[in-house]
Image (cartoon, rainbow over the protein chains, first blue to last red):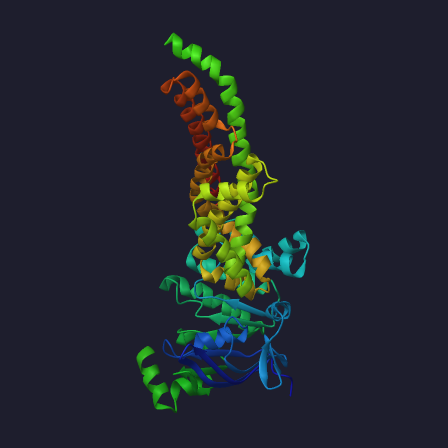
Length: 254
Length: 214
């Protein structure tokens, strides 16, 4: 079998005394679209943020293409990797945030080309070509020279997706990408994500959009109280949830 | 009236020379103090405990003691310095300490998501700071920095305590020589005002320019 793109083993995360993740094991294969659902505070965003080390795991291992992210075990203790190694690892994982986090002092195009130029040392002309094609891909070619403040939430999130894609990541992490959007703007962002999934991008999506989970997800994880309560194919989990907590949650949101 | 004009003509050349001294003190200590403040602010928010402690101690020391004390100290303690040099060092270090806190507050007012987004794209901390965080602080920095530079300009008058004949010292000398108080100090006030108003106008223009970028 092919090497999994992400492998999580025995992941625990504490915030002070609070244990937010209580032992997560998860394997994600290349090309897979994994959707993580669950109530607020269940730890799903934290799990996602641990994957690219925006949160530092308290215990356990995150492997990306077989290589441990952000840390190494030395004599049974976890030691941080040099930041430069972590920076390199992060270039392989694109992240999309709930609040977009576009750089407000840069135009849409500048947002997209900043990292390729700064991190990869790409030539500006080449980066701009790439940036324009990515903006076209998310349907925003004509907004290239607009500042984020002049874009709708949905447009901003699509720029943010283009920005993450510009680093040509092997996996895309979506942290509730539509939760901050007005209802009428959700569709355009989900459409872009759907297209991305159809093109074979590996995706981990934390979301409350059950329709998206059903339609696009290859596998759905239900998290509650810091553990993965249940995981299955979307049709199975939505039509026939096994665990009472899953049933309870789905009854509320569907 | 004619007496005022006559007096003014007598004192203005020397006052202008002294004004130059004031400007020298203000400009040099601002030009040196701003990068010093930037470095200290970055040290304060850095993960390094030692850098944070040193920067924190520096800021506390220079904000927590009278500027006049600092001027007198550098002049008295380092006997090889003349008054101008001692005052310049005190002003630079003092201004750097205030600037450090201004920049730190501005950096920390930027949404945490900005740093996260930059880092998630693979940018280093330094790249993220330089390209993403700091440029966003410029607009927020302007008003407090104008305050700081205006205060610095006026505080350069403390250099008179170590024998520097800057604007205020020169004015005072004319007053004690001629006993014309109002007719002398009005020029002193006008000169300080011109500097501060020019500074504010420049900052307002800059603010508008930065705003236009959206």
